[in-house]
Picture 1 (cartoon, rainbow, N blue to C red):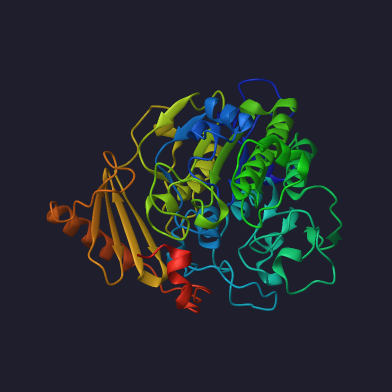
Picture 2: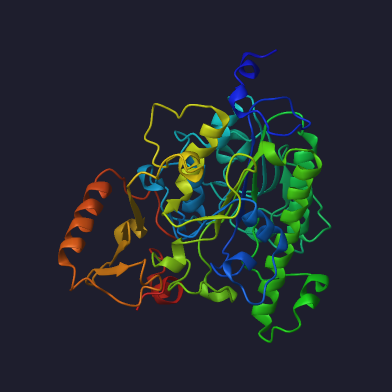
Length: 456
């Protein structure tokens, strides 16, 4: 037996019998792409049924003030997988797809959650979207993932599997596995990702596993098959109808994965997280109600997301936690559940959520920070207060407990709060680095800023 197998701790033995021997829990992180804050049943959606995600929320903990560390794709994922503000290592912008670009990707000095779990006996798999570098040196299989089914870019066509000859058009690059060979996928991509996630669970039911399941739904292009679209004939807006069908199809695919966990006897042996990588953008007919703002902004609609954690037998069921949490917390929470110490050679910015969720202690008092486009925008959250800064404009201050929609600027009334939070921002920012590459829209095409980033 390998030494790392001997390190499995009995402290996390399952409550009920399962196919796995007693030991560490499985870790499953499910990420939606560009999902609107309201666009799930348990979030109050009036027109999109999501029974499987609703059941997951009922079986676990919903974080009503759950955040990501960035308002768009790649940097948000960099923070999630490292447990560190991505500004510490310069991963602050998306990148244009270029398989020959060796500069743009999650720096090789960073350790991912997959790196740490794989080094401690876990089977690790990525299903879906990567978006942390397209050059081979950034490939998921070099960042801790043993298995892969998906694509390395920031998006993909849902109905066209891509071509092995394609090298430039990101959305038409071939779906592939860990061996790099192109797959002529015939199923609707969202359905295929659910199939592959369920297969990973079943194949590894007898060993601890980490599944990172990253849907590209409901990110554009808004593509869906007629069998899903026909369920939403009551929605008049064609974009909203397609979007709703895509979210519903994603929920069904997630249900297949959760079903595989249940049928394998692993429900109480598996810690599951679900969240979106950022808020919904204005162009895909999503709804971030009751929040203001969209993807690419540091208003609540860009960074507050649906956020659920479920671990039956270990975490309470049907609980809502109002304290602010952030996707950076997933890294230390997963390692704590697995009985694995945090890396000691770097600052981990997230905190272990398990003690607070179980009611044994309160979450630590802390200040959350955001920076976008190298400092054109900042946001700071401390308790009920949020400071919002946009380059060239006066600061805005919101009481999020009373005003989650950020409609009432209290900066003039609370100058001491503004000053305190701004000092905290300056102190935090002093420990961050400049972006390693420019943003391909905000920096390189400034004429598109109002359209894409909600500037007023």
